[in-house]
Amino acid sequence: MAEKTTLGAQPHNVSIEDDIHNATATPSVTDSSELDDSYAIYKGHENQDVDPAEAKRVLRKIDIRILTVLFVTYLLQYLDKNGINYASVYGLQKGTHLHGQQYSWLSSIFYFGYMVAQYPAGYLLQRLPIGKVLSCTTIAWGVILLTTPACTSFAGIATNRFLLGFVESAINPGFVLIMGMWYTAKEQPVRLETYYCTNGIATMFGGLIGYAVGHITTGLPRWMYVFLIFGALSTAWGLVSLFVLPDSPSTAKFLTSQEQFIAVDRVARNRQGIKNRVFRKYQMVQTFQDPKTYILFIMALAAQIPNAAITSVSYSPAT
Image (tube, rainbow, N blue to C red; front, side, top):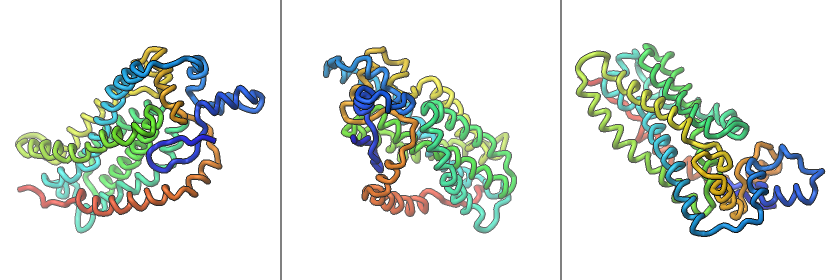
């Protein structure tokens, strides 16, 4: 059985070529609902040769469209979840009547929502069009941010932060799935770093917005503007993403029919599938048996513990 290679834990999966072999060799055994989403387009061009120059041109088109959306979305996601730090400079604690350790709990509560949503987020990403799920998620967290200024108590803003973490939980696993759908294993690391580097860019960009908010002297309390600005940007971008982020190579409108096949063929030749909605228990077992699963878990845990202390900062209200 072939492997589906993605970043992170790498469970074995059925590639498109395996689907074709199984469907051809034993058509009575293979249910059409278990085939890869791009099986039909791959089968229709199965014996067609692909010009390497044309494949590179298609890859450039994919980079321009897919990486741009991932870059901006990840930038906004990092800004939004850390917006509370910028708002604290301008009186968030006073405006929401926080006392003692309540502000510190707001950072933890965000990740409680993040953890709770992991299973439903993974299920939706597998069962529904991934582009639509991620775009609607972006719109949802933008709306949640826009409602944050209405919070006047710890209970209110804690609920708001829990819901924010809940909806943002789909971004990281969703982006890893997109990497596997559009890129070969060799191409994925550089593309992942392209959008992941926005963590640093967002920190710089957020500081500039925070500085600009500090010069607002009329209207609402200044801490509210942080959430209104970030929320408006995310909501607007989510609407854009809804129309420009494709669900899969076989349905991408920015590619011609021939280019769609090339996009699928590139991944298939790397012994990968595009997307399959069928849960296979043996893949879960293989994931838990794979040492890389635990290595990546430890690496992520070690990286995020100090990251939490650095990014979750409480400031005294500005005077």
